[in-house]
Length: 221
Image (cartoon, rainbow, N blue to C red):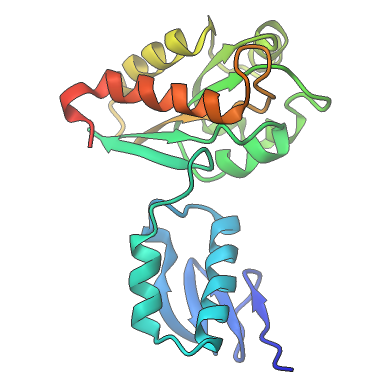
């Protein structure tokens, strides 16, 4: 039995590790994961490291793996990059149905025009509180609108009670485009279940995607 150590916590002289955003094999740099836009965040880097280790054991060459990682299109509803047009990225993270999952997404972007809400779960927004400095503006929808708006306003976050996804996307798009900073993100990461307005998180994410592409029109990829 052959055991390979995989970590994103430190640089390893033997094994697969990620340090400073670089994937390393036995301490030697292989690829810069920070430039792979569809795999943002330490959690995705950990997934890449594990996949890389498996592929190497199966006999695949480094360049084959590197090329495959760069071509990876991402997964629907899991920090899915819909478009990056005009300095605004549009990200569908509808699978984030609690505050812990939303926090994993929020740490990857700054500044954020954040669409959230739905059927609330226990815990509210406690896990995202340390990341609220990244929020340029929040747009709350669904059953959680009042509670989330109160919580975010208490933490000095500008909030719009959008109610529906249609209104949230339209307003977030307008506000993000008007932001003079070079790169912004419109992020759907609801921190809630979807069952107040949708049958499931997939339907919610699909609706967000459709609305974003309609907003972008001819500029959509």
